[in-house]
Length: 179
Image (cartoon, rainbow, N blue to C red; front, side, top):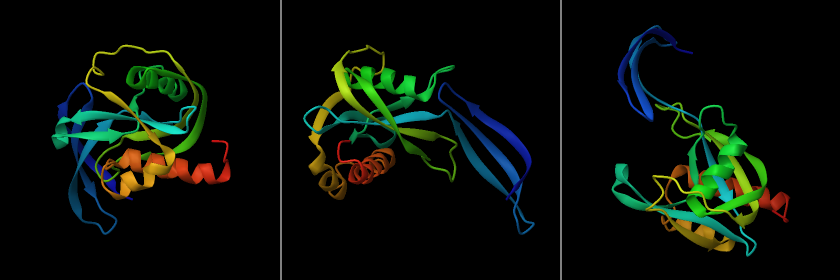
């Protein structure tokens, strides 16, 4: 464990807050930790009636590239994760899941960020689009489940939430073939 000696706010934005903590390490030394505070999010493995994973292709400014990802997004104030799953999936794919199953969760980058992603499986999908201001440039890409490992191996799917979410789903599917 590390003891926080002091904490200094560097930046507070709409999505992230950056702070620098001065800490005492377990060995008694003193150092600083740069921490990004980020609200919890949902990440969704959505499977359609044809056994396709619904992925989204979108430009990510931080890496100056389009990425193929599982749908994901923030949990709004006073919103539970399952409700966020339905809203985010409708916004990004145009589908509403009638069945939502929790698969687990994980921290996105615990070395410097507090963001926790709640991972869900969404099935029994029905068309029900919901417009959102930041989803205009997102395109839907249905991919057969069998092609997912190759897309990860080839680097076509290369973000951590998608890799973790899809591998978790593939393991879950082994125990519940109906998934």
